[in-house]
Amino acid sequence: MIKYLLTLGLFFFTVTCTAQRQYLLFHKNNIREAQYFAGEVIAFRFKDNDFKVTDQIKGFRDGLVLFDGYEVHANDFEVLYADHKTRIWFAFRYKFVKLTMIAGAGYLALDVINTGRFDKNTMIISGSLIGAGLIGRLFIREKFKIKGKKKIVVIE
Image (cartoon, rainbow, N blue to C red; front, side, top):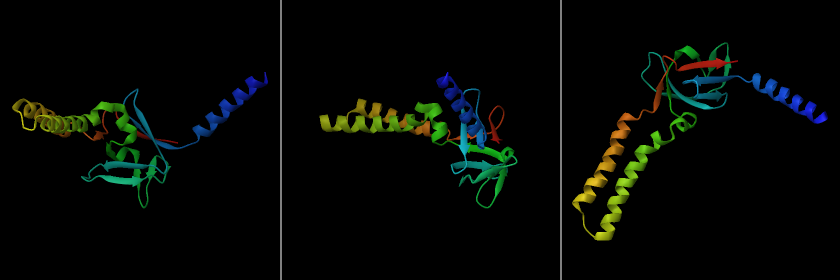
């Protein structure tokens, strides 16, 4: 009985402590969400601006995100740039460029070391891997446009 009451009390304590904490929620879809708390660094772009802003979140108030010297309403975010919280959603997507370029260069280097000359087939294979990495760099985006189902909300 005592064990049951302690477990129930601990549950209600954790629910009330975490329910009072404010954070910025990036909702991509039903499965993928990222929470940004005060003190964390976030990279974004405002509506009607063409430059990337990276700043530390100081706090939240009435649906506003407070930064050092300015505040932004949650609806004013146009782009959120990928960070460690959003990159884990697509583990291979962001490693593809590095893996293919390293594999192409490594294959070329190992073949030249082993044979002592540049072979046509080796150049084709390593060039294809390096080219895939360069093309991947063009097509793999480092940002999320906030529109449609993607939303940024301040949870208070």
